[in-house]
Length: 242
Image (cartoon, rainbow, N blue to C red; front, side, top):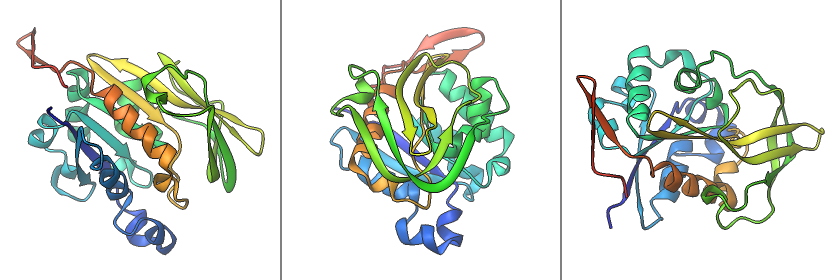
């Protein structure tokens, strides 16, 4: 069985400059996620970070990527427009994209959503978050119970300025009373896109088994896209991703 080829992209700034974050993710958020995905028999994950040449997202890397995971926060504006357009075209051609936490303000998410704002309420008080599964039959929710509970997280609250999702899988509730659309599916061109809310860098969210399970489930879902190649206005199918 051919494996799903995954690239986990991360700014990798907090982990190098903030001792609190470094203690939680000594090798970076990207490595915590990639190491878990590499325990899955059907997955093969590599990583890329902002300060690499072309942000680690060269044409060659993306050509070998079935699903790209994106975590960004401090340096959205440092991502070059050329790389953003390269990633956008790959998604339209069928590469899956999973946008995590504050990646809602990334250039690539905004480009694919058709909006330049991912405005929302937020509060970093370390509140309890309960992520309710509202579509238990969806592949992204496979193996989960009624909800995922995260003991301490950053609060995101509505109104979340995004297009209405094609499918809404999760809704979050926080101790302060706010709710949030925290698991949103989209289709753009041939590509599947999933936005997943949890993941503030000062909490060990990406060490929590249920969160990692959602990420691996979403990788499998996103990889179902058919990769296509557009040449001179004609669409030529490539081999489907397995």
